[in-house]
Image (cartoon, rainbow, N blue to C red; front, side):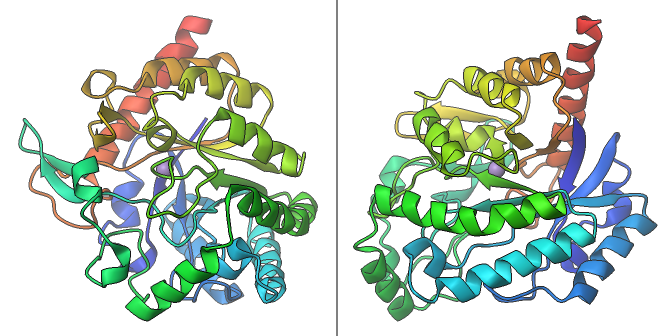
Length: 347
Ligand SMILES: [Mn+2]
């Protein structure tokens, strides 16, 4: 398993000098951030990111994300030009040594939380999803601004998007995803790049928009859309784990044996009725069987990438919610410890 850490490029307040000092750090997870969704990334921007990483002894083998344009998800006629641009990005990234591209297929809204700084018993704060808070939110009244939400959307744009999605149900979304994958996976095969879809977070429909990468049944269906090893998963523990019906240890075992997990996002959450709170990565802080998941990865000789996912804010740190340095570094250290122990016990 290769340990990685998300880095938001040169504007990230967390430097590569700090990231490289986290034990066992292999690669960053990054992206070209200053190009609009659907456009081709300039080769010089990709090369610059890579050389900054290499200078610090870090690789740049994982990209998160190359975002998928809404027209592709909705299935509009304009999707073909965005798919062509996507294919060109895969080629350029593959040539630069990128092995894995994380993306998602969530309509309009990316990961969604209802509060970003919920203070916990120990004075740390983290992101939470409370059902009573989500009920009060209306994306169309123009008052919402949350991370993961494209703040460039104006109220009118959002209204139009919702109208376009009115005819897109689960089946249609699957169909549009298949159309996209049939176009991009052959390019991935040629350039040695794995596509790794990120599950929907949380794994249920929000604001009436469908979500499909939510459970074992749907992931089985997804993997069959294009049955290629390059068509795989980012297995995000905290996302899929928000639904207590998902048996994560069983799912990880099944998909790792199939060779379809390319990227692990490991973090813990504490389940509450209809929602969850993000916690420290450590087993006993949340409801996820972190140790069981890592054990099953070790037993199956997992060689893909892994990163600590969202961290809490601790030790007075401020910054991008979920993406401070300290708690994610603790998370990486914890994952390293469990991974090394699991492997030692197998010998
Ligand atoms: Mn994740």
